[in-house]
Length: 369
Ligand SMILES: [Mg+2]
Image: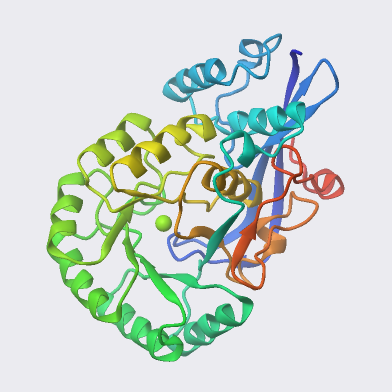
């Protein structure tokens, strides 16, 4: 069997009302998704999504005519494209979907089939006042979630601590709480400085009192030494690495034990092929691996298969903060949204590949080019 074509399409969902992401600073009035379809000469199609495939155009010929099952070879070419151009890992995801369809197996089983379900945590995206977030947290418990991630805003962190105390008082021990400090990276227009170690340490001491499960991105992304020191000075798990671009940098973080929780995203770095190595290396080194998934629905699904197949994640990120970030928005390219069961779990199925279909009608309506 050979790869016959690779087709890429770009789609834009208008967001009205806009989505105000806590880490952005600008209202988001639309949500873009790119779909990569790989077809074989026998009529099978795999697809992936999650990043915009910047710089891929013109490289199709490096894959056409090849056996789609030669995934490690394709990974090597994609890593070279990543070095020279953009992050084109959705093609790796599409190839995994295709390999599943060729072998009539779900991706999570091709990867090893370690777990048939994964706990989800509700990853919030917007800032609300204390009472409103406490109500939201209670709602998440009703829906079945066992964990939720709260965003800090970028004024005085003491205000965020007050919000967090209100949430803890409302939910008691019924919900694990994570905190994303979002100090690791910035949008291109945002030049505000990140926290330094002593800022992060003061926050960590407050989070200890509130019993927070992990503290995410407390320092700038390259400050591995700072992370390591912070780890040593607090009981709170330190998490990060969601936008780290290189597998070697992730390996370095694990080797140095700079984080307790490492969060690379298969749609943004290394694809499933690269991150399955990182998941295993992390586990062997006593570092928790649990992917970032804040791209789009198919990005969540790909990281879910990786997590179920090879990982041992305590909770997987499930971007969910309606009405601003609803399943309908997040999963607009998918025929059916991905949702948790009443126990807060994402259940794996035996459908081949990633087991999801595209919403072709919606894709037609939202197509840019
Ligand atoms: Mg994050």
